[in-house]
Amino acid sequence: MAPMAMFWVCACVLVLVVLALLLRPLLRESRGIAAAFAVGIAVAAFALYRVVGTPAALEPQATVAMPETLDDAIKQMQAELAKNPNQPEGWRLLGQALSNSQRLTEARDAFAHAAKLAPQEPDVLVEAAQARAMTAPNRTFDAQAVTLLETALQVQPQHQRARWFLGIAQRQAGKDAEAARTWEPLLAVVDASTTASLRTQINAARVAAGEAPLPEATPVASAPPSQGLRVRVALDPEFASRVRLRGDATVFVIARAAGGPPMPVAVERHTLQDLPLDIVLDDGDSPMPTQKLSALREVEVLARISTSGDALPQEGDIASTPVRVTLPAKSPVDLTLGRASP
Image 1: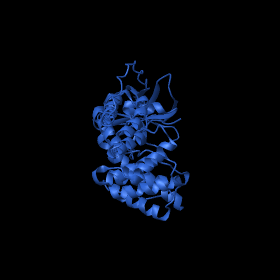
Image 2: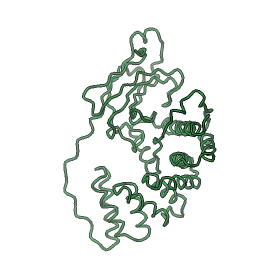
Image 3: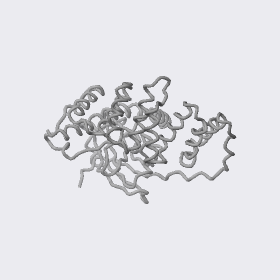
Image 4: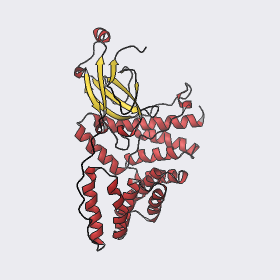
């Protein structure tokens, strides 16, 4: 197999293993628990869904043994990066996996490699800065981390995480007025649910700098929620008459980026006995808040019966034909499970 093909197959394998570990407990709980879990991952730096594939990895000869554990997958990726080190996305993916394994020093070094190879990618720079802070005493951002954050903001001035972390670094250094100025532009772009806590942090920095708190904000009408994507799922009658399935078999309804990675941007879990379904997928169904359904122009929508209950496809699963949809969709998407593809 070509080295690049091997590299990207290992990358995809690593993502699938990480995704399985993250989504299995997530999708078995309520939406509220899932949202709380997503917020926790956001704080710890996640971005596990940005994976680049290559057609060569799909060729028959490009086969890689599936690792049994995340550590096995990490070892495979480390071996490939040792042979092909000029892969910023590979180092970034490795850093994310190491972070989730609490191997923070190794994660810091992996993110540093990624930042060196991609010095104009703000997401990579921010992750490298955060990884440095995670290994520093008292979780402080050192001078090198601050430089990474400042560079990220030079490239993308509205990068929210870069601006937030830089403000934290400034507060840690006693630069309270600078922290307040760094954070204030975020008030215009963060979600309404975040505004109150952000104002509290800004006002605390202003008061510490001897300045007056911000004036009270004038209440404004909240923006209407995203209408989402209505999906109807049914079981093909002929298929149902000849195949016996357990009523508690899991049904996943998934939207994913059209032509992009196979990871869902929105997913709901139901059971076979719930069919037929008439649901709405929206941003609240996103397993990772870094990628929202409302941010996409086109998605592929499908349903899958999973007898194992796992979010990842397994042999024997029954999937509908994927339907490509342009958002916002004017009409419902109809999916049929068990119908042969035309």
